Length: 425
Image (cartoon, rainbow, N blue to C red; front, side):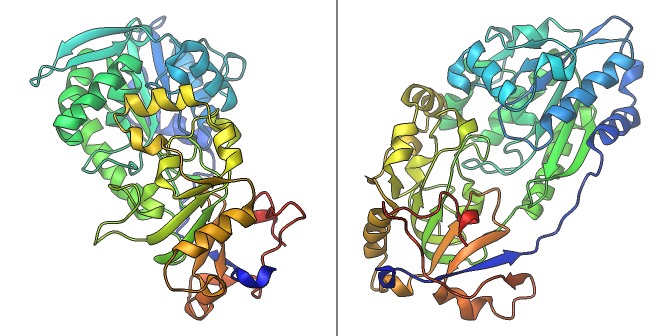
């Protein structure tokens, strides 16, 4: 039966790999370098932001930040800064942080998840500048966040420190109004307009920018002062783009993705890796990779049912739809003014059914000869299963190691492949 599917082989890619060996020591060194301890008086409070992205070492980074300010005589606490995620509720956002190991016991300080905001100001465009009431109650605010390319947004500022000032510290109310503003204005315009007001009036003491390498590891941690924040956000974004993981080939007939989730990417799977950044089901002329069809096999546990990004695929397994929390997902995509990415594609009970349909829609290429790629998720593409049609292209590539000979795809008695690509023998 397997003769009607491509045989696949395993390939390992090699990427540039900068690495922070000791995140706690680096956090201390960076905060010391910019001299922020001298700006904090004994007994003053410091609010430290914690977002909803799946940032490697985030609990350790936040704990080190808390420890630094406690050693300076301050009273640090952590505030949830994640817009509408977790259903836009305090309990939902606390559950996300707990899943990441960001707890009061581990970090040694209070963790506050209030959704209340205060309007600090209005921008030149007339947009109210929302700011979390819990953060505003502090004497100082430290913004901690990862800088990387956004899955839908373009420009000098995408998913990073400036965005945390808006969507993170603006809570659900801020996220709603800012995403509405993105419909009428460029993201760069709004992020600068709102972000500058937040820096001016939100008692921002410093920021810690995190950039990850292509192996989902902490590649760099950089502390910045408020007046540097905008320029450094742009600089770190360029570095993040350079370190972005890539699929092994820039064209494919079918991409199988084992799992999507909010901790993997804001859109479940990173469109900077799979293409389709502006459009749901095709790429722009200059955009790579070019993937004809995408099939999704599961949601991650840490996404808590948030299936944002499912609408970027053409097919999925029925178990994905069953695992979807519609309320959480729909709140997220409505807040982002981007309902398309929650649309449910045709779905099938088994991998065999899914592949039979998907491979019949890739054009004139017969299924056994399809250029198929199979990855765990868009954070981990250093290893991938590749259709045999890719073998001539893989040979001789200096950054490739071919790990197996081509072999048949193996289904169990229920017509299912192994739960993940990594489990394939």
